[in-house]
Image (tube, rainbow, N blue to C red; front, side, top):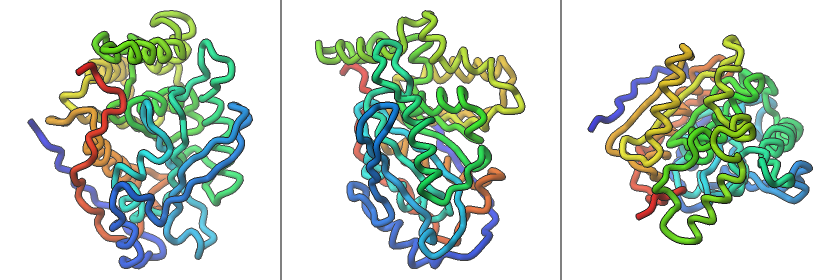
Length: 323
């Protein structure tokens, strides 16, 4: 097994946020919506219904007129907009940065416009509804260089799909335990196969894409989309996977495709790690540190305290293999 040792030198710039204020946000336990987290309800034209997203604003948002970069953070299968804030130390980590974090409720829609259900337009929901709503109602920096997208499992796939399909919108893409090959290869044979309910879930997931190799699946396949991204528009890519995760084969295949196409990327494979929240807690902290080094995000570092080390997390499996 090997652990990641991360050394990151970050220039601390701009007006300082008091350590005490940031520390209060960092102390919120997982399982409680922290004071710097709110839930926003709005009407989605694409889905034709009321939807919600969770929002973290910078600690100095109310006392400044600054504009801020935005991270769109996607949940996994069976998850929702509360997952990241309830099951990780995200609100404490974010307190160190001048950054807006948006966590949409993506249902089980895989962040795509469904190949079979014309009402399930989850790509349009993110791209045409959420992003414009956030940029209209909050002081964002409405530029590609100040937008990033990441997520876990289904959300890792969603971030990679949306980020590569819309490279004009995002400067960076992250995927933690991403189901990156779900449209390319389908789900692993031994996944969601134990009960009739799971088999129905698997059929529903496949219906969003169509069979692997079909025209509708290829349109939603990051392996296929990758080759079409203009090199000068390629976002910064960060992929992290647990060495014991049931989705590891697809991650390794996707990274091999990146290498074959000579696309720059960073891939971290960490053992022993499975498809669990302790790993995603660790990786979102690392991804935030990496964002702080990018041109559009670097002004957003505060003088807050060091974030707490990742603690034991609910080992919830977002898309479990058959036991």
